[in-house]
Length: 151
Image 1 (spheres, rainbow, N blue to C red):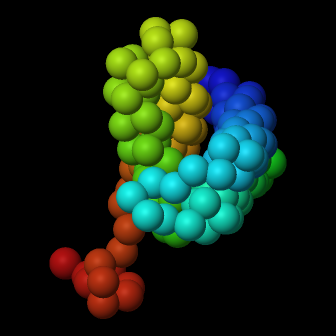
Image 2 (tube, rainbow, N blue to C red):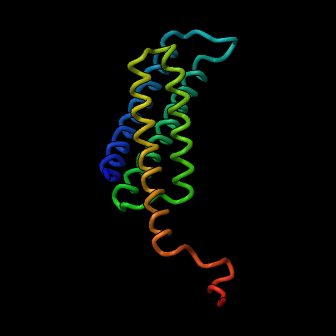
Image 3 (tube, rainbow, N blue to C red):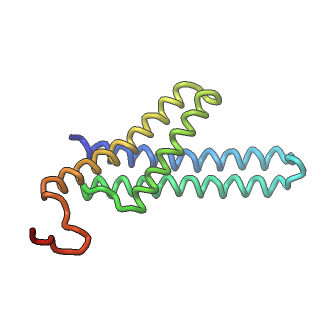
């Protein structure tokens, strides 16, 4: 199966997405700064800085997810518990953003988000099945007490 190539492509897509999100938020911060308008009495400079901070945080989150996928592909092993949780949360975020993209941006953005979602979920599912098959081939694990009890 194509676990490793899909994980590599997913890592590349997430890294490109991280850079794109960071650049988009940087641009939006500049627009807010140049407009010099306030929203409900908020300071325009505070809105600019908060937009840049949001871009760095969300871009960093996507970059960490890309590193986890790249590590998964390089080691050809399932990510650990923290990595799994991070990738699952990233998949949920992509599903929600895909739903919002349909109405706000269009079907092309929705398609991109669903491709990214698939590139995140497929390695998770493929590596999990491999771990289950290896456990089944070993005859299952020993009971929690350690060594199996004689009959």
